[in-house]
Amino acid sequence: MSRPLALAVWSVCAALLLACEALARMSGGRYAGLVRLLGLLSASTPRRLALLLGWMWLGWHLFDR
Image (spheres, one colour):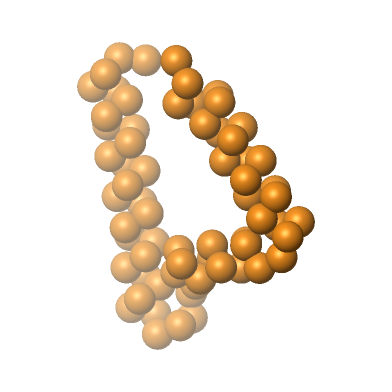
């Protein structure tokens, strides 16, 4: 993947995350924000382990070059 394309993809991902967070804040609690979603994902030990393993897999496949 070329550098400009990679930067465009990361920019779109960041914009989507910011849009989701803005929607959650403007909804008055109807939608969960990113912090609340991460809190739900890390509420128990098996979920934390799954989150860690998922992050490791993502890092291995996308960030390691």
